[in-house]
Image 1 (cartoon, rainbow, N blue to C red):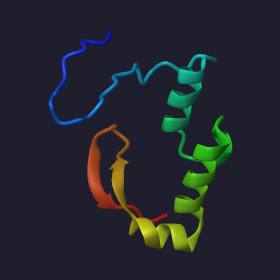
Image 2: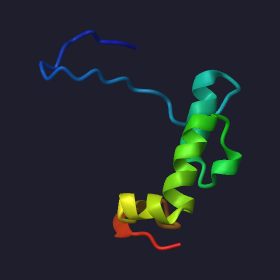
Image 3: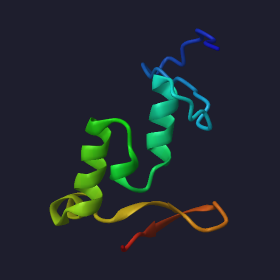
Image 4: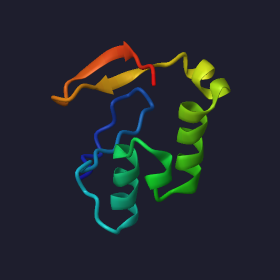
Length: 83
């Protein structure tokens, strides 16, 4: 549902159902966003970027290793993720 009410900040925000993992393009993208391993992703471009930041030293240095990580309960914490 699009409200068509501008925020006045030049941003365009689209809300999607992140639980949709159907075989549609959107479902495949939501699946990829939930993947922790690039080899399980549908979209090569996204998988390549994930692989760069997670699997190469240069990529890890570029991201400083700081990201939101979910603990086993699903709660997000800002932490330094070391793998």
